[in-house]
Image 1 (cartoon, rainbow, N blue to C red):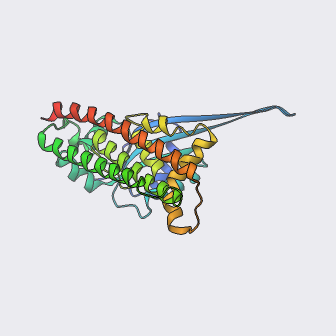
Image 2 (image 1 turned 90 degrees about the vertical axis):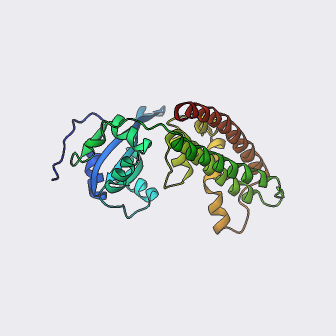
Image 3 (image 1 turned 45 degrees about the vertical axis):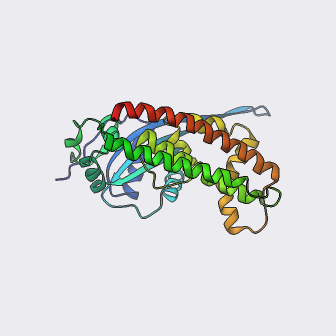
Length: 287
């Protein structure tokens, strides 16, 4: 029997966000994986002088629904952002209730951690209560697929990175940056599988970088976006594969592709070192 469980308001614009999510999703429950705030202040020195402040609330949520959502995650994120008057951005991980129950029954460590550790801000019933006492699972049969996924994705990323050197850089900077986009995808997916034991269903680079930011500052450090040039570079890496599909003329320069390669090579190498250390840590726990 469904009976909505009310939780006290303790997160910014929680009520407004839940009200919107209920309209967009056949909602069962919502767990807060993380929350952060970004504040921008503008000082106007011309008469009349003023100070304008804007605050953006950024949520990472596990959203459990009764039915699969009809929109892809990117459109869902944009819809929430605009309906919340650009005051709140949500990075969602969305499962159906049946999927969550099935995965928890089979010992999914990722969902187990969230259900047992993350604050729940909405729950329509207590059907997940029985999973509350389940401990994290450690076994070689859990470690082996993690190691296989890590090795496979990093090998794939390394191969893509190596193919860049076989392309005539004077002719195809757009192709090079397009390939580098997929290098970053593979490295991020490898890190997320290793640290979270989770496989994303959505592969936009800002989304993947945001998820990686929960366990490492590597993406934010290498692709800092603190200057116009770094923002432009990140934009190129996010969109070069679209340029390859829809534009026949090169939009990027040789200098752009060379700089993008150096950043991605650094990201790959540092992620490799970070991952190997994590792999050793997991091996001690599982084997």
